Image (cartoon, rainbow, N blue to C red; front, side, top):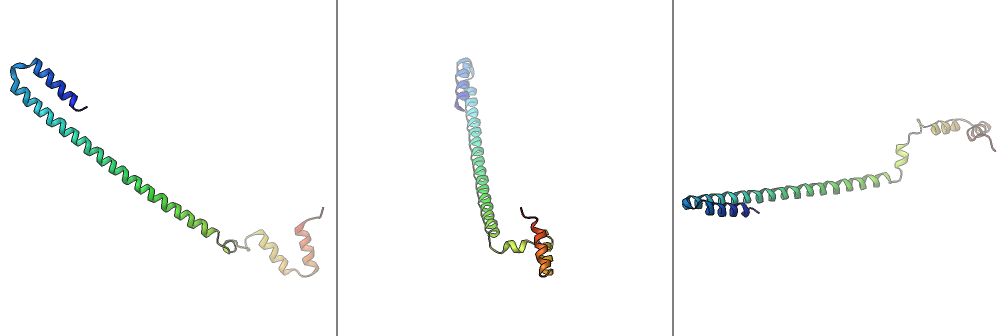
Length: 122
């Protein structure tokens, strides 16, 4: 693709400008050098973009792996027995109040309190 403009210039310059052949060859040589330099620069730029993209993909892969491990650790720590007892505070829950009042009540008073909590039987 980069050779087409060079060939086009060469054909047109040699066909139409036959009186300054030495200058035409110098122009063709300079045009060739510039075309090669531009092509080389483009290839290097593409290479660096690909390397940078590969680094981004690698970093994202590592991040996803670490987040996945963290999620698995958090899930396993939630599933450990005895964790529910530590997270529930009976002094603030309504059921905690009910059970505390049951502990203070004795005998018939406790039975009445249970009946009150359970509600009427159908």
